[in-house]
Image 1 (spheres, rainbow, N blue to C red):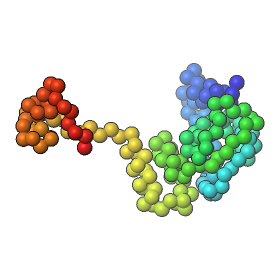
Image 2 (image 1 turned 90 degrees about the vertical axis):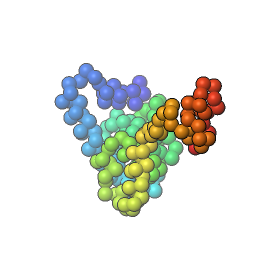
Image 3 (image 1 turned 45 degrees about the vertical axis):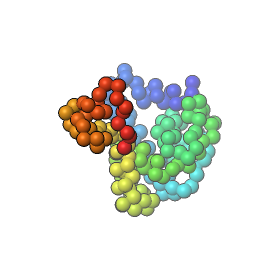
Amino acid sequence: MALLEEWKKIAYNEHQPQPQLQAFWADYFDKEKSVYDDLLNSPDEAVTGTVKELADRYGITVLEMAGFLDGINESLVEPNPIDDMEEDTPVTLKFDKEKLYKNMVDAQADWLYGLPQWEKIFDAETRSALYKEAKNAHTIRVGKKIGRNDPCPCGSGKKYKFCHGKKGAEPLPAE
């Protein structure tokens, strides 16, 4: 069985009592933070090795490293083959700094995007802009609804129902 499958069986076990699951994730998040502490100290270094070598380097289990690799994979310059990786699979942790920061914000992982190392990587203005960009990425903005008796937005001066709101009429031009 691939490492990621094993990790998911443990990490997302619905039959595990809630307090145990919470303790599991609290422990994992501490270890994850420790790995990011190290990675962000040298953000331009491409850390490479097998899954087992990186787990040993960061003092975590191979399964925890599989979980970490799953979490960071979308932020990597070149994704790792996480679905079928084994202990001896070579992996690289060269990440896109902006993408990683935004993914941490998106995951609501304030213990990660709040790490002090980010202050050396991005100034406050850039971090703020990346934060807003990540938060707005999933925001759906709906325009004001046009009422039947409102003036048509095309500027014809007609009511919407007699202009572009009429059955079979051309759609409004895109803005």
